[in-house]
Length: 400
Image 1 (tube, one colour):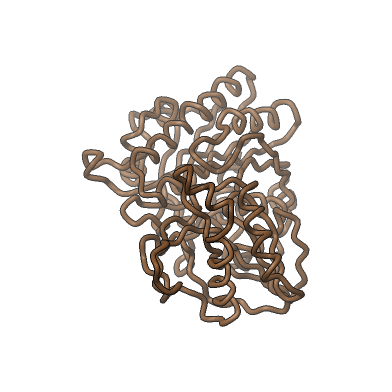
Image 2: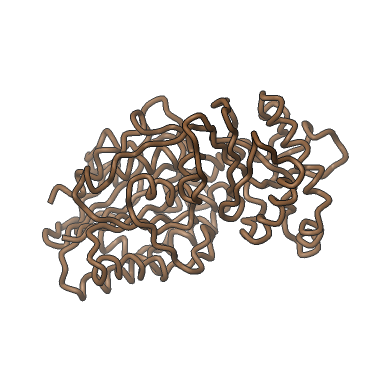
């Protein structure tokens, strides 16, 4: 038996008036998902433990089978694992976004956050900008490390895990009340604006009609993580296929191999087919038992507040990942179990994450079921099937 998880980050949503009272998942054309649903179990699963923040960090830890209450030490430390950042037990890692702030002539505190991803800036441009900041602000206490796209890392030697606000939670708002209370972090953010707003890379970006990447934003502080090996827990050899440092970091910590797919970038224009092929090859040619395919695009489109682009991301997952997986896995003759779900909802209305349960689909090629339902939030809830703890889902997947 082979096992596949298709994780559509932030794919779940609320009914939207512009979609005739349907969610993006209900509205999207998903013939492959529909055909799977007719032969599958569907239901709802709570991926976020009560009282914990509804982030992709806690949610994906849960889906991969690690109870966040036991294993979660912060988001940025997991990302630090992915990019090979050396961490001491006394270090604190912080996510360092490069964001877009408004450019009117007002004090830094009175600016508005426009874009948490600087228009999904390329890693190449972001690396140049981060170096410019590091050249002026880095010292023996604070060190910057380049990640992917807008997502980077700051290591604070002998630091504190201080409360910080995720930038995607306050899009469109004046930033003053959300800035770090820690004086040094606050001053570094302010100084980064002075450095980046005048940088030639941003002058070129504005000429091209792109959002300037004009400020750092710190969040997601945490200490060095320690995950128990995935193989020891489940006796399965797995691969992670993701463009996002967070998921790659979870994989590193769990001893799951990362498969790097050229052109996979976490955006709407990611290499969908490459992700699917990497999963199939790992299972059918390389002897792995388990593949976890993470697709960031639905979440990014939710943060952008774009109904059309979120629907497109879901349709791309269906037509360009799941269709290829179904074709090749069915042709192989191998039995397989496929689990499809979001990690959390990212409602268009809110443009940020919420902790509500999410719909899942579980297909078993060796025991196809017969139903007339479709895979979406409404019908999954109506099925009556509920998994109360997301961290139990992986064991459920591997139960046969």
